[in-house]
Image 1 (spheres, rainbow, N blue to C red):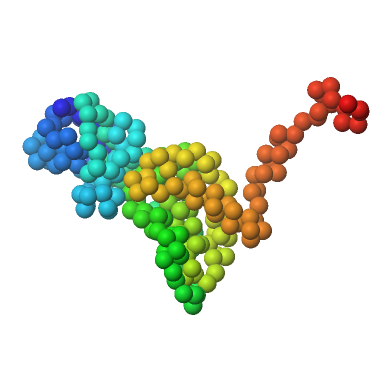
Image 2 (image 1 turned 90 degrees about the vertical axis):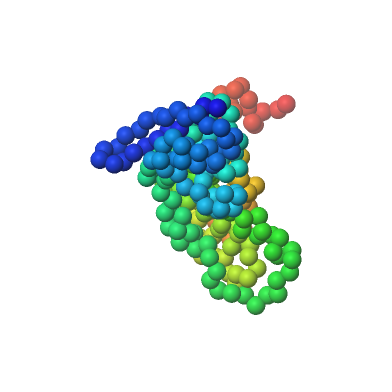
Length: 245
């Protein structure tokens, strides 16, 4: 089976190129290992647990984000690094922005409450807690591609996880921090939801955060512009609002 790998080498001067490899393994990560062992020891990729838990082996297969360890390949598949992150070499990208985004959203335990935690409270935050930081959601996000200041799917799902955490005495800091370049900037396209290997739904998480923000008195800053742009004069259509039917 032949696969094509888009590669990038920063040594000396940046260079992009495509290599075609003949492999016998149908699992993508195993195919990477085969290539490195038998064909080209310089092929650079990242992996960890090899079981879909660590998220470090995320790549794009024919333009779609996938975990290499969980992906079966087909003839002439095109493999490339995930988008919207700086490529270090070949399929390895810089994901150091994760820590910065967590800090920006204040999505961590702050003032602990004394409330008793029940199983239903755990269930409420369980799905968002399963994020494996694979960055597939950022790679697929058109807003983050255009605006690197956008907090993005992972950070906002994490914001919901801690906003809904009953152990948190107050989530005001979180809700306040996600107003600018945050929940109102998302187009709700659902691309992040489609590629999440953990079944997390950032689109719905962001909608929930919009609801929480509205309850605290925040409003969509783009709504007024949207309403004014949608406005039109009914009289231009031959309708007289003061006339009789």
